[in-house]
Image (cartoon, rainbow, N blue to C red):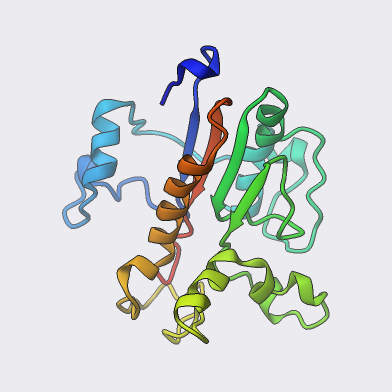
Length: 221
């Protein structure tokens, strides 16, 4: 994804998924899972058969991506909500200062939920954050119904729809049910279509940094 207008600076596309096992790729020999598009990326790029997250817990792992620091340095060693993310330097912030047009679409899992973390813009879908849904002491503007862009988008198309209409919460890892709405209304497809739209709307005179951050295959799949 290079552009002569970018003066030799490459565009950057970062794709992440949540809670996906390392072997859940058909190119890795999984007997059931079919991942033709990911397989093509692996064939035309580099696939590490041994790669490790800085920590198995979501919040500190994401802090490592944002800051480039270990949990000892960034100060997050486990899952804890409502702790402000105050970091002077972040990956999107440094790229923005370097002249990149920066955008995140999907899951951030930071606090406050709409903290830009250096991005110019965020289209947010954090899945199902217990703190932002069940905590009645938080301000209204921090409630899940207000901060999640995918939910707002979905309700414009399906009035009253919610992420828990299947009767499953975000950690229902022992059961699975088919998606009950149109495929194009699934949050995975939402991240893709919104990302494509960003490529249409972006500033063509700047290189871009786009983080496509998928919630799935996090339960309930």
